[in-house]
Amino acid sequence: MSEKNREGKRSARERLAAEREKQKAAEKRRRALIVGATVVCVLGLAAVIGIVAANSGKDSGDSAGKVVAPSGAAGQDALAIPVGKDSAKSTLVIWEDFRCPACKAFETAYRSTIHELTGAGLLKAEYHLATIIDGNMRGSGSRTAANAAACAQDAGKFTPYHDVLYENQPEETDDAFADTKTLLDLAKKVDGLDTPAFRACVEDGKHDSWVAKSAQAFTKSGFGGTPTVLLNGKNLQDVPSMTPAKLKQMVQETAKG
View 1 (tube, helix red, strand yellow):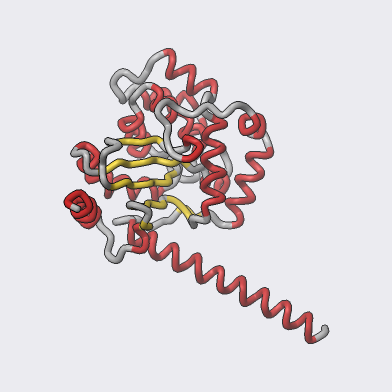
View 2 (cartoon, rainbow, N blue to C red):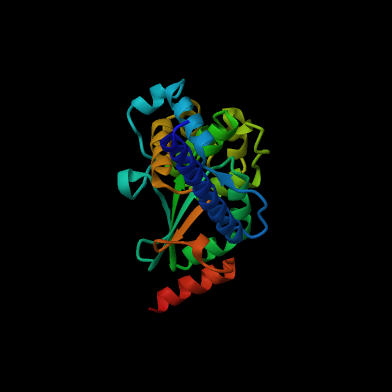
């Protein structure tokens, strides 16, 4: 083997090692953000391949079809579901996957604080839906649940249904959310959501193309995994000793100016 080839292989190994260290550092920061979480939903090479495979298979028709955003969707390409008042001085951008255990851990720890702050008009939350577990573990539950959540947004019931989905999240390896009957049964836990319009929206996959577009946006974002949470553009993974109390303090300080 020539010296040039040996140097090329050495360089490739060094780049791979550096990338692995970068991912490890990102995972460590995310674990610090998620109080009590012991798992991180990572978007690695295997996940990217899984997503591409899924989108090139039976979902390709959905992706190629007309993108129907849910009612009130905002932001670039209308990919965010907003919760809270536009006048709020702080914005919390949350990338989540309904099958992701770490997202459930984040919701369990931070949900009441986020609800309190959005209810008080101090915080606007923007939810972006990802489907990385469908790529990692195979299946379609992330996508199907995201579509159902978008249908709930059409009905003005996104927040309570979003919370019900996380409260009833199946094991990561169990693709239970792929079954629309499961999603429709959970809708009965939200007052006024179980309607013919909602059921048709879920069963027809009305927002599947929108979900696929959101998933593609996440893949292109460069974020390492879910949940990814940004407060006024700052990744909370980079905030030392992040807690719900600290989030509340940061939002209140911004509101005071």
